Image 1 (tube, rainbow, N blue to C red):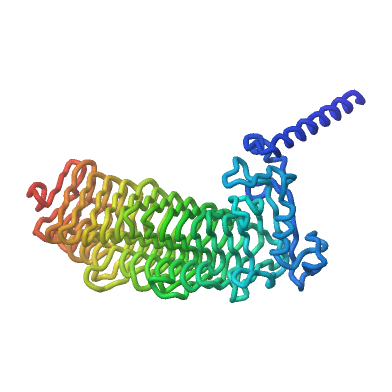
Image 2 (cartoon, rainbow, N blue to C red):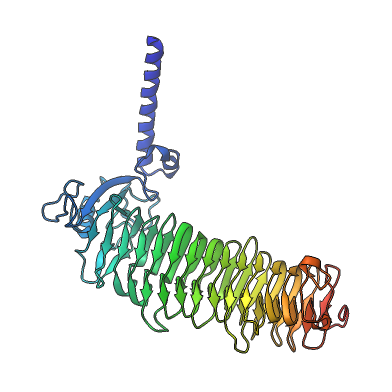
Length: 538
């Protein structure tokens, strides 16, 4: 027994020695070793090893914060975040783990965490309650290491702007918000809650940005040159922009230039503006949505997302955009108006409302829909001429449908294109996917306006109903419609998949204003063209 115990102890000591040696190697900045040893770092935060923690507390907390007598410990905290940052900056020197005062280090320095207890209402520079900026002019880590802001404890922990100051300004710095911390009560011309600029990196792994106000752009967050990553259970909610168009954009988030990445369980909700972009407005840059929820936001157009960037793309891989409203314009879920691409390969856009394009409005550029993407149960409320498109409304640009589902969208009883409406200079190409279960006056599934092209080489149009003409597809005067390949448009003989119109000659499957109609199912062996008499009238 003694030998066994001694052997186990000796083995344990060897393992501890090896772990310490490897940890030292990792601390020197080796990213591969850092990933191997990640489980051994209990204070790994925001992707960085944690080197220093400083505590800040309000005057009503116990113990209360005091910048004059405090030392930044939990038992003797500071009163302002500014004082904590000063101590971190003074400590940040060559002895700091992986210290690198360079613009693009191979591996970031270890992080410093600032723990907030209670409600912080003091400090600031007259414009910002907290400013984290590279005044050294060296680069991302010139003045500070990565900074983590988090709440200390389960009570109310917040940094208040006091309705007069922006809460947080991130200038060419690396800042993470996490845990039980709220940034609230901010007010500024641009970026009421947070401003990210100068190539800064702002990450929300948690925490909340709520009840902030901006005059021009970004009630919650303004990205004006930098990167904003939102993940975990992070939440941006109840923020407002008060300005009038062309200002006043982006109730929740405004990207003026840079990149916005959203994933996980992140939430953007209940933000509003009377201008475009209730949840998110992208003027320049990229928006990548790989999870999360954008819901219950309100704007004039693009209730959920308004994307008009001329130098970036909107990629939606997963996540949900739902229950948003465009109060006077189009695009309840998404308004897309640029020469670039909106690629939707997954995720759901549902239960949104607008005058036209309850789900998505394409004003220019290209919408590419594929994979498991779904646009469903959205509503177009307008009753005026040329209105409709419960699911998708294409004014100009191109809609390419390669897969996914458009279903159960709604238009007013007298309007057109329950699923898809193509008008003005828009074009529609369908090579896959399904358009089903819509109701409209003309064009239950698809309404093709005058002189517009619709090419269908694959996919299925089924279970739609027109109270007048064109249960599946309606082609207005001069419209160009061609159906070939493996595409299917069900007719009155399609059983539970049948499209329905008022009469046989009203075209349960397809109706054209030139007098062509198709009652029976047009299956994979049936080609239809507005330029040919073949297969019509049956």
